Length: 323
Ligand code: XMP
Image (cartoon, rainbow, N blue to C red):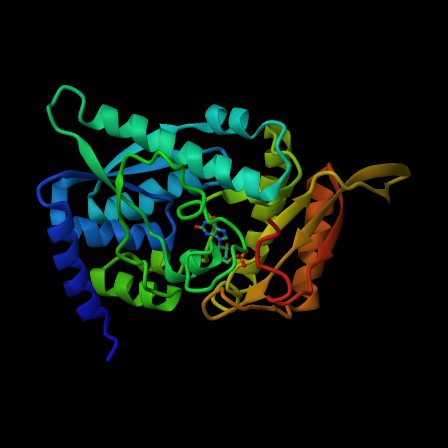
């Protein structure tokens, strides 16, 4: 019988056996998966773990601050924050192909972890040998790692890893689905605010801008995204939807009118989905009045956006994220 307590006990043993007395780093995003993975490893090897939070500039509004507040405050884990915003933007410049963008982001994450690892052990004769990732079973399957599975998209922590990876991976959640990870998180005492957070992909807003990722486009998307999140929360819908990607069609323009003026702006797509495990999903029938408030606010408050559209596609045939 599946039981979160057993999973914790078993994984703690495995982690200890794998890691021994070596130093370990964990890429922490603030989301459920990496937080639960970090909590497991902390339980197993305590202070041998240092978490690394990479601000890649592809985060949503307020996210960087939240990690510090929620996770670090409750666990007391060692945390290093790396400002890698310029580095990611430079690496992504000129790229529009989704898989290319994903692979660039996956590679840059690792390069940042390598730099951080060197700094963590600087001046000692130790080495960081292990990297903890919150990879789940569906991430492995969709990246083509499952038995007979096609590569749908390269999740940043699986198919997006560079070939010359110097770390050995510690992936205690690799056989679990999200609902199981949440149960393990609760068992470990991870704060409920993190355990129930909606999924957000490691590549962040980088795969929600359809087209080239630029600083200006990120600002537009962030402004629209925070409005959608605010209104969904205000309507009490957070636990009813699995997640709601907000997508900027950066290379599409349409004609609009506001006041007496013509506009030629970009569309924002709302992609609310309901799901059990992200392997399949249905589009969420959000109340019209909530959609209406989101649309009005985005078009009033974000000058570059003059149209809001709703994605009514299930998965399959659509995936949850657009890229
Ligand atoms: P798709 O778009 O494949 O998404 O239907 C399934 C779930 O996975 C999330 N997702 C990712 N999570 N790294 C992650 O950590 C990734 O590269 C990645 N790509 C997609 C997505 O938000 C959804 O919950």
